[in-house]
Image 1: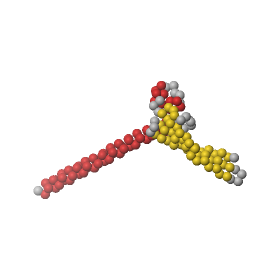
Image 2: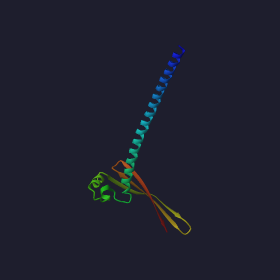
Image 3: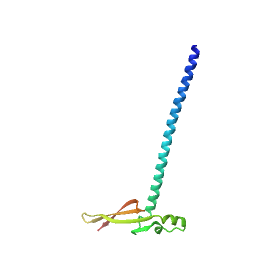
Image 4: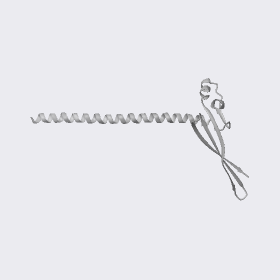
Length: 135
């Protein structure tokens, strides 16, 4: 009778170990799937942001007020040209600060410009430039 009781105890311990293992595996798999879905959405956002920044950077040195991306670059590929016609850029440039510093024999004029480039009325990037005039 004592031997039978020990065998039942071993079987019950094995059953408990299996159940605990299943619960742990379920928790680990759920956590892994959650991390994977978050990383996929993060990389999609990062890819979109990178593409928009690249498109906007093509217009940094242009001074037109409103233009389409297809007017900034000439490509012989019709697919690229068609894709670039979807993007409308609005460029605003302002002098935001003008300062003069008088040193002993030198006058330095510092001009700070801000260029705001808007892509399709929803993505906005700001660029700053500084001009030094030494007299």
